[in-house]
Amino acid sequence: MNTEREKIDFDVLFVGGGPANLAGAIKLMQLAQEKNIELEVALIEKGAEIGSHSLSGAVMNPVALKELLPDFLEKGCPIEATVREDEFYFLTPDRYHRLPFTPRYMHNKGFYVISLSKFTKWLGDIAEDLGVNIFPGFAGKEVLYGPDQKTVIGVRTGDKGLGKDSSPKGNFEPGMDMMAKVTVLGEGARGSLMQDIGKKLDIFSGKMPQVFETGIKEVIQLPENNYFTTSIGNDIHTLGHPLGASLNPPGGGFIYEMKDNRISLGFIVGLSYRNPLLDIYDEFIKFKQHPFVADIIREGKILEQGARTVSTGGYFTIPKLAADGAMFVGGSASMQNTPGLKGVHLSMKSGIMAAEACISAFEKGSFNRETLEYYSHLFENSWAKEEIYEGRNFSQALSKKDPIKFVHLGAQYFTKGEGVRDRMPLREDCINIEPANGSDVPEPESGNETEPAYDGVLYVDRLTGVYLSKTMHREDQPSHIIVHDQELCVNECYDTYKNPCTRFCPGKVYEIETDEKTSQRRIKLNPSNCLHCKTCDIKDPYRNITWTCPEGGDGPGYVTL
Ligand SMILES: Cc1cc2nc3c(=O)[nH]c(=O)nc-3n(C[C@H](O)[C@H](O)[C@H](O)COP(=O)(O)OP(=O)(O)OC[C@H]3O[C@@H](n4cnc5c(N)ncnc54)[C@H](O)[C@@H]3O)c2cc1C
Image (cartoon, rainbow, N blue to C red; front, side, top):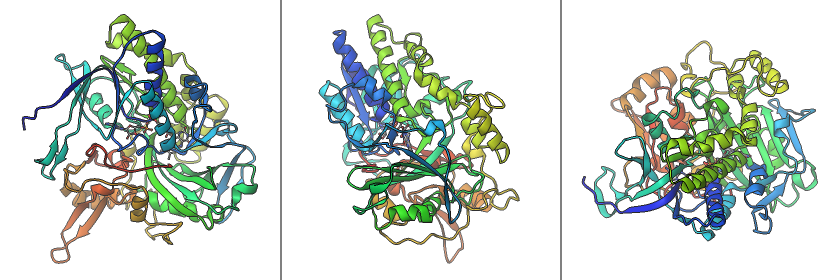
């Protein structure tokens, strides 16, 4: 189809409206004002609003925020609570034990509990006031390259109004070509444009493969008299049940106090897990039903639910941070303190440094890789690098079998990350999964196929969870989830792994149906349930699933997550 597209020129284009790019856009405008440089800056976000696809724990270390907006409190930064004390528990199936100490990476006292959706919305308003052109509801669908096929010159946004067969409907609106001297990609974990750039340019060469964790999170309204009315600690982390004492798979829970008797509660599972029968959503429910957690959330009501992956590979998985005409920030660039489960401040700091490099590029009038690599230089000399570097072998250690895992973790704790062996290799999450009938399926407490009990208020099934995420997709559009070979799913994957997609997807996007008459199996896709967590793109053992952006504006409608 030969489509005429509108072309708009900008100096700088930010793709993604998360904390990384919003901090970047704000810093860029601040510097441009200081230096009297006039810049046309745009930011596109696939969510219908800034914040509607933002999900995080979220205990925020305010170090980057203080650097960016020292008067953040006067500017009305939406803070839910200040961490008074950390509590760390080990859960057995029916008991709990408070650990005598909290690992130093989890010392969150004085940090802020925020809602990432409210926080990014607030940052978005500040960016807009400074002159950034913000386009919510626009998904970057394709990277545009110059004639040399290696210089990034902008991004094409997705078409709107295509039918299921990709033919234009009456309301068809072609995507726009948003051209820029510098494009900053801040798509968060497993960015789809990042993946494309990685195939074309050498940004991942010589780097370890990225690994991920998937978190399911809820905001729960508690009654007035609740655990946090009397407890000192309001930042709770748990290990153990339901994943077991051996951290196989790795993961754990968190509960943070929010304003107005609300809590942020979530459960995270490392995608290095081996058991294909593990069901991430069921593990989340089992965590909530543990007596310790059930007691905290008693008489509560879920207000919102959502899910998202986080990149946890650490320092050795950081891509080259610049290409000709482009820079990479935030979760897409592995800006995460993995042992501390914190990435908001590091993502913001990466955006700030990218903005500094951008201004310097405009001063020089040069936008090639050499010039933009000033960002890498700033990063290598920053506190952010130091913090990420300390966790450089952490995911590697977590993916080992016990008891070796605990030897590595202990050694790393006392050697600032170096451990028994530095630069331990990482394996891609999708290759860790083992056959369902294998003799070495290692997670004893997980992977049984009994459904947990739901009550529809505090313990809800997946579809109610999707409803509570306010996820909407226009039904009559091409599926944004591409299953390359559906025969593979119903034959080889069914026989070997029992279709793990039906269990790792928290949104029930994947179902296997059997025709009663012919006994033929087929895969049923429900892309309109998709929470944009991207677990499927990461964990499918055959790499048979590709996640792409649906029509801009579709997806979750988070308000408080
Ligand atoms: C369950 C969970 C708990 C966490 N807890 C904490 C915590 O307590 N503290 C902490 O500091 N960190 C926490 N993190 C990590 C933190 O959320 C991330 O490090 C941080 O959000 C990364 O910021 P980002 O801007 O890079 O990406 P994101 O926050 O993911 O934002 C990316 C944005 O880009 C948009 N986008 C993506 N692709 C496109 C495209 N092609 N076109 C247009 N828009 C696009 C997305 O819709 C999204 O709005 C947690 C993460 C998870 C999943």
